[in-house]
Amino acid sequence: MKQNINKFTCIDLFAGIGGIRLGFESIGGECVFSSEWDSFAQDTYEANFNERPYGDITKINPSEIPDHNLLLGGFPCQAFSICGDQKGFADTRGTLFFSIEEILRIKSPYTFMLENVKNLKSHDKGKTFKIIIKHLEDLGYFVHHTILNSLDFGIPQKRERTIIVGFKENIEFSFPKPLGIKPNLADILEKDEKVDKQYFVSEKIKKKRFEKVKSNYPVPSIWHENKSGNISALEHSCALRAGASYNYLVVNGIRRLTPRELLRLQGFPDSFKIVVPYTQIRKQAGNSVTVSVIKAVAEEMLKSIRNKKQAMPPRKQLEIWDQLQ
Image 1: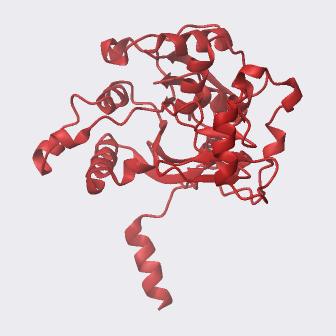
Image 2 (image 1 turned 180 degrees about the horizontal axis):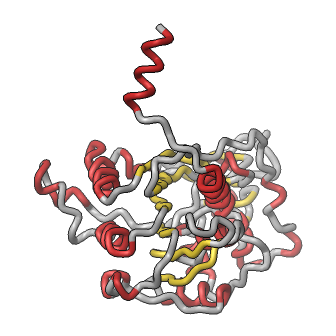
């Protein structure tokens, strides 16, 4: 990446349907390798990127992966808790994060970006996250992390995700700031009269929804039923979930989200091809990233590399702070 900042190569691990790839391709990235084990996700990926991802990343020798400047991965957070206390916990073998760690160690790309659930930071009282960061730093990376919400980047979905970025040099980097505008749910919804009847809920479910929602609900809105059975009518979607029930989110209390609407709620363009059944596109959208968020992060990463300003060491920051007192 530092050889040619206008053209860089990346690999797409735990690729899903390619949301992270889309975000980085939008700023000039060229993907040279992808990996995804789910066959239906592979179908969607192949239809849209004209290549079928390699399967199980744990079965691939890192040395056989093409050289690249940037590693991308939305890795699943397996149960690190089996590692126990300090010494046991320091070993990441047996987790999917270890595959990423090995590729970073052997291929040593200049930078990486990883995405995971918001709760990664609090998993096992924060031990999981601390060990992940330590292992990345031990590989020689200067690591930055934060939680970003899709609602802040033009998408009407409340989806908070942990983003981890690392560079081989201690350069200045800042995560993207919220756009400061309220996303418009109407922009992603299709007109009811054009939606197939199969997406409309039964009268029984419809009656149940309307009995629990106040009459002055916003239109349009997405109605969300939580585990307690309470229903909220919101001007945005709650986070899409891969394993949610069919009636977890209901548009205006009368119908489910269509495949195209699900993808729009993740920032995918309408040109993105849908080639799998509805059950699978629900799962894929729920497992995906929000493309708009990833693009914003990608732009900031590229900006930092182009500017290449060395970040001030913490000790120097303290010296300057002391001088100001």
